[in-house]
Length: 188
Image (cartoon, rainbow, N blue to C red; front, side, top):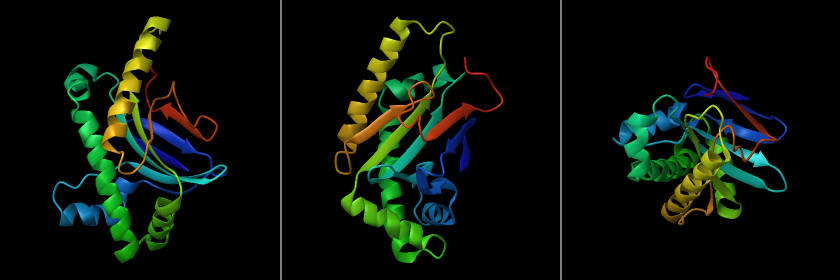
């Protein structure tokens, strides 16, 4: 299955992923956002079928060529807060969908079952500009920044899970089951 988001193409392996939805595009999500102003939503939800079933929530941010205007959002914690709110509101949407959906009720109920007994992964997919030579110093700085983001997001989402990842095309935690590529542009 493929999803397009933020000028990126996410191709999920059909043998490894099931019950994939582009959550923020579903009727149930739009109904919730209409009913409660300010409701936020993650981009994708799916079930990874490896050794166990893992509910995975993805939020995608592509800051390539927009680093300067997003620098403050990343550095002052606004991005972390927004991400945590999206996960929280999505959890409410899953519960509401399992109760009242006329569109994806079976999927929402499967998600609820996974929430009650299996792991939940949350992935903040952030693409940023890369220097052409991508030196080891830059790689180490990028890893340290991602680690700091992970720790802050884990703190915000400790009520749900500690399985939090900050990813990008160079650091894809699902590289065997998920391919991500840029649309209409070569990565810098």
